[in-house]
Amino acid sequence: MDEAQNWPKLGVSACVWRDGRVLVIQRGKPPVIGAWSLPGGHVEPGEPLRAAAARELLEETGVGADIGRLVDVVDVIRRDAMSGVVTVHYAVVCFTGLWQSGEAAAASDAMAVRWAFPEELTGLDFTPGVLEAIAKARQLLGV
Picture (cartoon, rainbow, N blue to C red):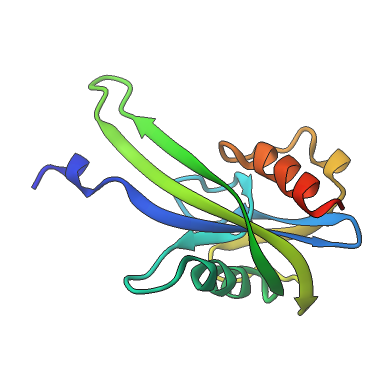
């Protein structure tokens, strides 16, 4: 089977807010190791999207949240520079909501976590579409 036929994959992310700050993580695993992002990951077969986002949030950060609002769907597509063959293609469904429980700590796929005011995110290396999703989520929630 051609490797390109394994794409696209479905992912979720959680844009969680607490006291005007958003929870971001630094990815600890490829393909975007070291980049900052929102907590999230793969959707398991048969798993509802919101449940997947809540699970990934808890696994990566130890945080629980009410993440019922849809923000956007972000395509993450990468191609081999020489052949043009798709090497990564994720459709990431982003949800947003407010913190409910837990103290953020890096776990699972995260090497670091932090609560940050949106103005503090400048200069960090983010995965594609994350800053736009944060801005949309902030507007949706009015935080």
